[in-house]
Length: 246
Image (cartoon, rainbow, N blue to C red; front, side, top):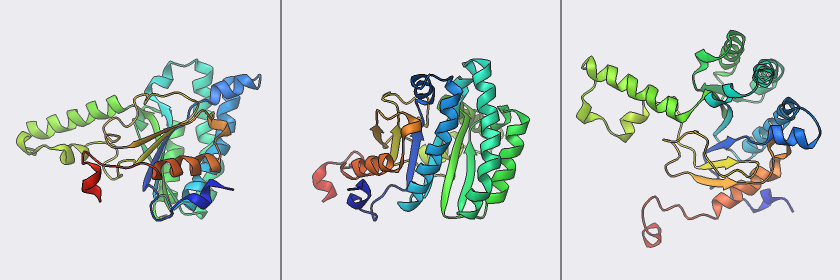
């Protein structure tokens, strides 16, 4: 029996974020170079996106490339950039036709120009879609994002456009890359690792975590259903006690 049949479709998370981990290890287990796994990981993105739409998830954020990933071997980084361009070119028509709205978070200007151009074209083509929001975290790190927000705030205070005593958590969020995106209710990390890896540190203050041993290229619809079912088994108190919720 599919996990899907057990899910309460009226209580699915509005926003799911995923750390897609394990491509390289999956490839090495197959006797191939790490980039082979990244290519197969694209199919898992397709499957996960379809499952998310089936569950009426409004936002799906995928950690695709971190600022720390530049430290990987040059041939792998070059291959990832090339894969990004080709994947967008190959997938964008289907994304557009199926109501997917694409956006990004991260230091996009730090990506190769060809990647920036392909991203901008894809974002423009899908801007009016409303079936699901697919957010790609590219050249992203949470520490970079927070420091970038602090710099913007400091500039606003210096120019007298913001009073420092008016700053609170809600206003701080308006200076983040995710200012128009709700905080994720569920964060999934594949491959068995149990760390956050500099991802959405501000936004996950009350996020539920789901860690799975499945390597990303093997992550399919049932794995997402299982994660959502696990999420629905949690009691989310946000600092309150159980009696207050009832």
